[in-house]
Image (cartoon, rainbow, N blue to C red; front, side, top):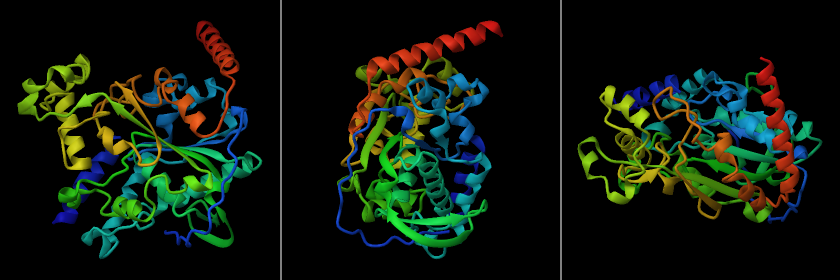
Length: 377
């Protein structure tokens, strides 16, 4: 019955929005991280749970100019070297494969590379390898959104990197080369990721069925920082969670953390209360505690990875849409209006020195071209 209940929770989330063996970690090595030309640095974007690659290219069909990828291009990154992990929304149903991970699913001892999430990790490794080759051997910036953040950490694992030749169905053909993750990845930047399992008394509610706990036990925090991989975690502080019956008890200092009038009207009409009550439900599912502050989906404290460069953004929401609706927002982490609030700090942490004036000029030119094209239309 518990397994059936879990499936009912997972599948609606999807509709609305093979394993690796890790070798023991050898002696660490520090890799130089200095770079200056963003156009030569590849970027791999790891979609969050229920997300499709298109969400980062043309969110909610608003146009590519609203996409996270476009925001990166405007700031100097090479469009040919920006890759969103190829992923269709319906593929998240594969997480339900964890039901057959016996007995681990039922004993809360699943691992990231198990039946539930191993397919994502394997594909991410293959994508990183392809990007590495395409860029001429440059190390990438790995950007993980939501669940893509902790899955990216699982992909890095203990730092071993068994390069696998895979076909389009993620079936292993051969394995004949080993290197280190730090030879492929310059930095991991997470946006609204879940980096902690629920509080101990609520661990049984963890939707990863132990995979996140395993990750934090085996490869905690900024695990590969001593090998030259930089870690940055970005979290939003936008909505305070409150149960529906407690809406009138919102503290005076939290009055601005209640969501927009538009989205609150939608929630009210649907009988869901408000952004605060929707956030309460989501925060409780993630952490076991609803009365926290966060990005409307993940509590702030849960988005900040121990040992990483932590960046907290007031008023920033979790994803391309207001949680549980089709209302687009320019307040999410990857929106053009928000990227400059965290990207410069993240690049600095990654050892990337950027000529600000040069990038400002590129962005202004890019904006001018887009306006001209819009005018011609």
